[in-house]
Length: 411
Image 1 (cartoon, helix red, strand yellow):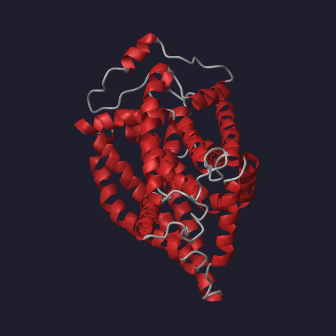
Image 2 (cartoon, helix red, strand yellow; image 1 turned 60 degrees about the horizontal axis):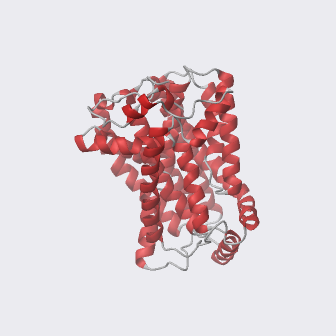
Image 3 (cartoon, rainbow, N blue to C red; image 1 turned 90 degrees about the horizontal axis):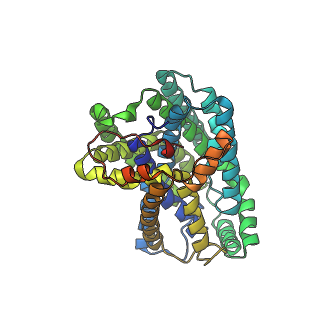
């Protein structure tokens, strides 16, 4: 496991955590987000612009990158764990995700990952080419279904529109519950779980599975062991991914703002399914190229500890956001502008980077990573790093090649 862990993989995961934080925070901050209606409390040009930019540049992109890395990391794990151990890992991940969804955030992705992990386990022996073709087939197939749905709506209900009054009343009711006592917060989550589960099943899960398979193919080829050997591929990902991905994402963002409940929304979902992975790939290619510059090595070193304890940081983000926006704490749902929410995320992420670096110097695992490993191996892992490990990790990273971590840093 020690020789398999890559600094670039950890740093990419740390980078993905930031995008996930930005997106999840928008759902915590306003019950109107995702409804197709702007929050009436923040209708200024600046507020609407920030909200649109978040949807355009962040939404549906970073969970794809995280999913790719989940599939890639599976190739690092499969040589060191038996099937039963991996199943225990998935079971614990599902339990953690279910608690997260009920107590903190219904948009939890961990339960989806745990279920899709069963498919990944079954597909673990696929050849890279087969895995890539299967991923492309999944994305194209689901996009075709959404496009067909769009044509059906346009044909049968050409004047279909969002029921703004009903959606507004629903959003205000949800905000009131989220700002209430803890029992009301949990009640609101339980009420939203069926609709959220439908979204995960019909949109996010197929895309995540496709990215699992792409990560599996990349991991089998060990492509991130030395990304700079693939400079041409990285440049190609940027040259294609940015123009195509940003254009597709602009359609998705516009439909989210103006086309909810119409055929346009279904067509936009179809476009996003095939273009969002390209934009996620462009983001990944860009940061990988940055990591392998003199200044970028310091960026990678700052991001990697957060990526090594990504599960703890992901849940930690939800805890902090729940305290800020729900009745668990300050109940500020619907009271902070989109710009303020983004600034808050920047501050929280900076704190997480600092805390992660300090934690990983002293401990072998993040708190939840330690629990997950204990469930996987059916024994309590060592908790603290040895003095020799702490001394080694305190030295600056040199060179452009990936450096393996110590055995204690593997998950």
